[in-house]
Image 1 (tube, rainbow, N blue to C red):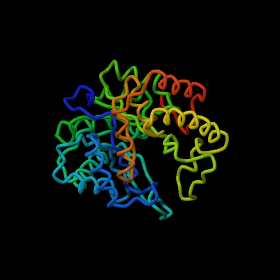
Image 2: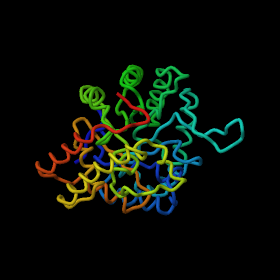
Image 3: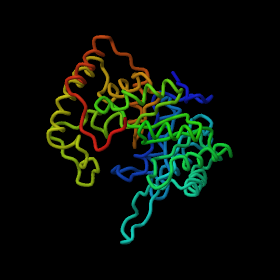
Image 4: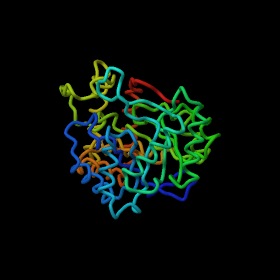
Length: 326
């Protein structure tokens, strides 16, 4: 079931635990205890790929949860993290905001800090979280290459890049993985990036398989998001896009019922089954959520049901998105 992490000796499961929700930044009612239980549930459900980042929580909440959960179990998982985005206080003295910084010294500092928080001497995969337009990409890539040569990470990846940027990064540092958004309704990377990854032997790790929870199918047409819910700002949750997405979900619900699976399992299974996709990052803040999506690794659809899903996707077309990657 496991798939190669690029050209490394590491292998990852098709479903990964995305640890952003554990931090509780944009996730309502996330607790430390639930976070630890969620990580353990992921491992016990057969997941070996855990994905976090330096910026997942103003005080490293995600890392601290992982450190507690992985005590005595570190060798059971492929642990991925990211550097290049951190929290900084604004000039007005308000709440800290996320800032992108790709300066080599900042990347090194973040790497050292996250290793301390995770209580480990190295991660298995370290990404540049996002390119810094003020810093040459080759400089950031070179910094990660140095960290790899020093044994701080076993492999290097890059996230949130256009293909040209990915190629530039790969020219300056051995590249094992890319991480980009991809799901049934956001498929920009199919045309160029996924084929390139297959040609180059680079793992494609994809996030947003459920479109911030939309494709879980649990929000009906009349659902109202909490005013504190950050999803309210996304086009997919607004106006005509919301109505079209609900029509699409009705079609998925019918297939899911026929297959005796949940809509979330159907969406994750579709994503991990696409050519070139190595691992699908599924966020969760409670154990039952990751158990549900982990089951998608073992799902098999009949040809008839698979075609019904494909037809629903064709009828819907791609959804509006705040940004695209090609």
